Amino acid sequence: MRTLPPITDPNVLVGSNTADDAAVYQFGEMALIQTIDYFTPVVDDAYDFGRIAAANALSDVYAMGGRPIMALNIVGFPAKTLGMDVLAEILRGGSSVAEEAGIPIVGGHTIDDKEPKYGLAVTGVVEPGGVMTNATALPGDHLILTKPLGVGIITTGIKGQAVSDETIARVVHLMTNLNKEAADAMQQVGANACTDVTGFGLLGHLHEMCEASGVGARLRLSSVPVMAEAWELVADRIVPGGTRANLSFLENSVDFEDGISEDQQLVLADAQTSGGLLIAVAPQKADALVEALKEAGTLAAADIGEIVADARRKIAVVT
Ligand code: CO
Ligand code: CO
Ligand code: CO
Image (cartoon, rainbow, N blue to C red; front, side, top):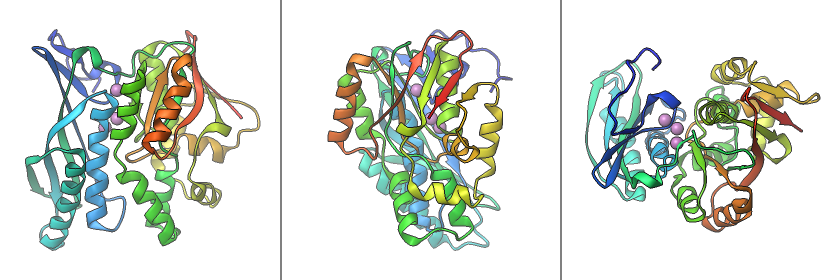
């Protein structure tokens, strides 16, 4: 993205310059949100894969404080080697999640591809004043996380057949869970900044928030919710390459307190698919947000640390 020409159109409220979740374009009284996300299967079941990819793509609209209105399918599929019934199941999964989000899938595009790929291009709307970005976190804000970590490690375990059916069901439930309720709670209480936690992991997306907002952060490891199975797998050295890459990329941006093991560092950097929202909220509203999230039934509602003033924009992780 850094090689793209700079954006000069004044209607572009959020573009590629702050590594935010989606683009926002002012259009009269309203602003349009545009985002696209697609990937290769993370689980074996075609229907579940479709649901996960759709929930993941919709998440960026929720992270921006917006409401999705419609979406397009984007599909790569090896029609010669996989039956068309598999593709039908993927699309059926995507449609079921779109229906849950209350939006139509209005079309799409399919190309022949060696490996299946699926996702959505999502259009959303937001009032220009309601746009939530990752660039407006303030020192003192509490950091709230709405889903547990460990998805990347567990889905890698699935590929290595090291994971029980119960655990697969739990991680599928996590990944297909829409961030809609979390976003509603955030809007209701009022927050300062937000992003969703996906491929760069909790630490990577927090790092982006710190860079964009010009602040640092302090994270309490003991407060971070993690799926229990992830600890067992990481102890058995089952870690995705992307998670290791995230951690080494952050080498100069994160200070770990003595006693925080490499396993714990890897979990905090674990690449998530369709992870939760990471919300920066004013300290006096933090308890209200946690309560609103619990009431909404989000998979986690954890106060995991705070934003601090730091010109170096570093993340300090304490036990
Ligand atoms: Co995102
Ligand atoms: Co995204
Ligand atoms: Co955002």
